[in-house]
Image (cartoon, rainbow, N blue to C red; front, top):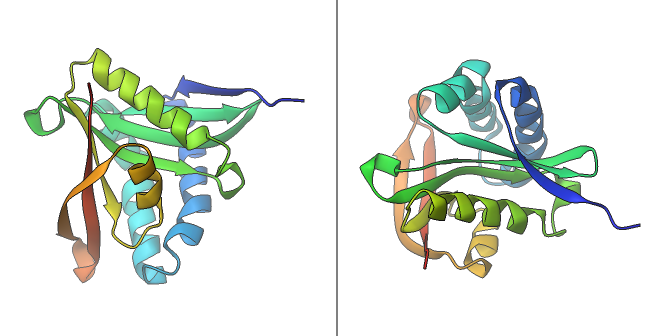
Amino acid sequence: MQKVIRIESAAEADFSVVRDIAYATWPPTYGNILPKEQLEYMLGLFYSDEALASNLNEKGHHFLLAYEDADVMGFASFEHAYQGNPVTHLHKLYLLPQAQGKGIGKLLMAEVEKAARANGSESVTLNVNRFNSARDFYLKNGFEIVREVDIVLDHGYLMEDFIMQKQLL
């Protein structure tokens, strides 16, 4: 029987699900890229209730959950008018390991792009770790690498990212 995939908006009540997905996906995604201490620091920094609430309520991030039947398989978060420009920035897109390769990420991206167009964005941008194989997913979905950036966090931790962009027609 075909499983039903649906995308729904998320709210503060869903933060524990978002956090659970992040904690389940980050170790396999970044375990060979980042030291364990940095991984733990960044998870705490980005996925605390305070950080998620600030993203939603103060910074205007939108959160989406991807369901396969009744099970949450992944999430995305994005922001319109990023840095005052006609751009939607994809902050996060993570899928549980068992959800990868099923087209769920593509559906989440399509929903972000639909929202971006509806809000007058000319493009969608994102940062992806230069060593994260997810960059291939983004390339296959019409993004291009526009530049590299190094972002220094506390404790001397470094985020080595590509900035990718997809023009919307």
